[in-house]
Structures are given as C-alpha cells and as structure tokens.
Length: 102
Image (cartoon, rainbow, N blue to C red):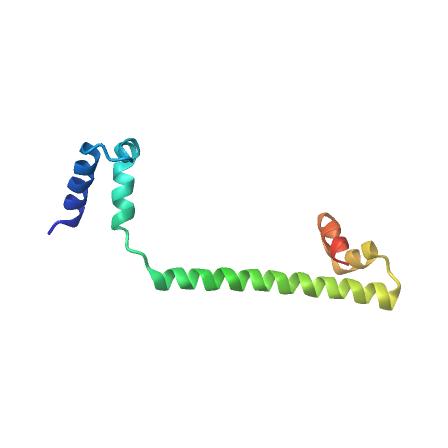
C-alpha cells in the first residue's frame, strides 16, 4: 500500500466529484497531502507546551520580584517609583508597566 500515492488519488477523485473544497484542494494539493502525512508527535508537543509554560512562569516570577523590590525601596527608603526603578536598573520604557502594577 502506497499511502502518499493513494492519498493523492483519493484527493483527485474527490476533486473530480465536485467536492465542496474543490478550489482549495486544487490550489493547495501538495500542502494538504503533506499535512495529512505528517505524523503528530504528541510527546514533542507536550514537551514544547511545558517549555513554553516554564518560560512564561519564569518571566512572571521575575516581573513579580522586580515589583516587590520597587515597593520595598519606596517604603523603606522613601523613594519615588521612578527613583526605585532607576536604582534597580529597570529600563525607562518599562516604568509605566510597573507603575500600573503598584
């Protein structure tokens, strides 16, 4: 059984039968065949999702830590939010983001 060849012939038959996706399949036949034949790697997908979640979690934790440091400097040293962020080396373009969270 030659799956790619059989898939190609099945698509040709469906296209010939005035199937509702005729125009799309005629235009994108090779791409559709490739997608159908591509194996879904569930393990790799799950690993990618875990990695993405880990990266997002680290970024959120880092931002939360910066915010707490800003609050402590403001309270303990009576600094303005701008001075506290400057002391922490936070880029000026991020000031508004942290001000909104204070």
